Length: 389
Image (tube, rainbow, N blue to C red; front, side, top):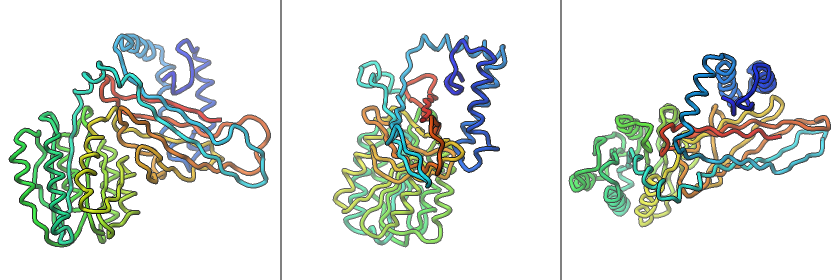
């Protein structure tokens, strides 16, 4: 709460009220209606204000915080760099860019971290297209990739597999990866037939993933398809939004030439997953294995940022640069970024429009909050703030 309000631990009630009023002038729904990020940040600010202004609640929080200081906790850094530190006032709107970077704790290279990391594991669901167009080499390679994924998973990991065409079936119900040969045999029996309806497969995949959904797990669905889906795209996006709220991310992989890239981009970015293009059947095996290996190396899950531009500033677009370049959805309260790997940063390029005829002097631009669940911590939720001016 001290960080959220931007005050010190020794702040007086007057200091707290003053900080709240200063932030409310920028974030209150009456003055900042068009930015959904401002609304969620204002709720956080109000909660922090109410907690710190109540002597009993504040004392209780401070005591709990003092106890937590004895526990070693990991963190991530949030670094935001503007394209310009100073701008000329113009008679027309102008654009600036912010580079937002989230960097994992450098101690992730230590042995202590490796021991604590073992507590986290994968809750992985594969949703595999086996329509007619997947017949032959494509489906064979997908089966090989699924077999290799099973080999690299541990007994603590959870796996479920869905096969879909114009219908969907649960090939492997969500289960710990113990009887590996039996699981592989079930995948080997998949045959190609029918058309492509992604919603059927995806809804069953999310349903299976929910069965073991947990805060210590990397809850992830991988969709692999080589075709377009017709008539159910909006239902898929709505399903992805619901999955994201529950802490499930979805990655979408398009094989060949026929899939809808804009649809798969939106599907993945809504949940913080990645969307990828696989040019040939021969590339499927390595691609899927690399993707699962990266998930196993997660430092933080459910990473997201809320962006609250000042009332006269507009967020125009967001694009993830690393670790996987892709456009991001900006219409929701949070921009979902998915998993943060222990050895790689997440970087996002944000484009803002500033108003015309700004008065000369100092001004604020946007308040940004980064959230994520650090898997190795006992108290997982972590937040970092950056206020750009």
